Image (spheres, rainbow, N blue to C red):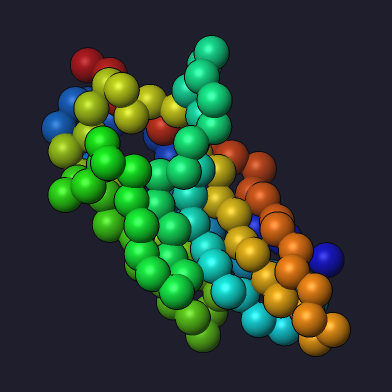
Length: 118
């Protein structure tokens, strides 16, 4: 099993910044893909950013959010700048792992609340 532990959420004023972190631990052979989804109340979960074979961003966060990974530490970060009230959501870390038997599995963190409000 793989565990993902997130940190870094909180309350910030519009225009402010936050940095989310997510560390994966457990039976890890290889992580192919790590990233962040978010879910606002009454809305579907949406992909915010991912880092795997390529780096992809949700259009509305391009130029404001930056995803990065520390491969050696199985950690992914999301630097969020120029935050807007519409960025308010629970942010979930995910990791797609490849086992030694060639099986892919997806794992999720518990979620961290990001609230952008004055």
